[in-house]
Length: 353
Image (cartoon, rainbow, N blue to C red; front, side):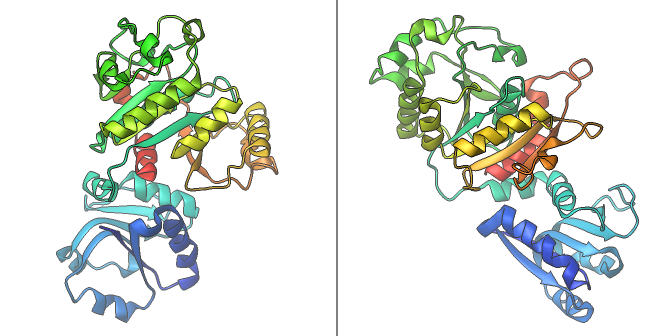
């Protein structure tokens, strides 16, 4: 079922970019109604309406509309103040902030029921989400696990697989166990019963994950093509809705083949000059123009620092799907549960679904 979004403001020119933003992000998953006439707005709400998201100029809002079945109401205010209103159902948004900020505020404050509605997919085919960064130290694994956790919170069956040579993702887990059932041999030899063997190497903590290898994977002669075989076997099994594949930063022929194989590629970058330069090299070597496949994420973002993604002419036209704030490693417990419940990763999960 499509998401029902109603945009209301007497300034038609103001609503045009807002409508385009929601259309761009939701596509066929949303039905958008734009109302600019005050009298028509009144007549529209005289009949019963079932609306998921109502974004309306504060001066046009009437308490009578609360009798309607409206899941989320956002008031466009000309005063820059907090989201909170006296009515807990209503949320206020500063009208003259950027379209991107309005979109982010809406998505981040949607009810969980609305997110689940949009998250219902028509097909049950397993989708592979590859998370890749051209820059080392970008927090690629953290983003991968955050996405896996958030997807799991959307009631999706999720498996996390690390393809890094040196695997230390259990830093975020309560379980420090390693693979110990000779799984590497089955993986390298492309065993026909690989899915059955895999079950003994999987643990669960918010989402399912393949246990890390204690030794470097190249010591077992494991290559990316071996993981592709595993993914294809899992696709045939239908055991998962999403498989999140964490990858290392080097770019190779096998890495580009894996990109082509996966349904979606999350490219993680940072705002500093070096990361931006490496991102530029990536888009000069790989065609990342398919917006349904490639999504760009800026991790460890800080408002106080220069954003070279905007300053660099080669990257300033890229659509950054989300700017993930730099987590405080001292004060925050960066467990998978913490990441899964973070609003930024919830938004990413919603965009993926």
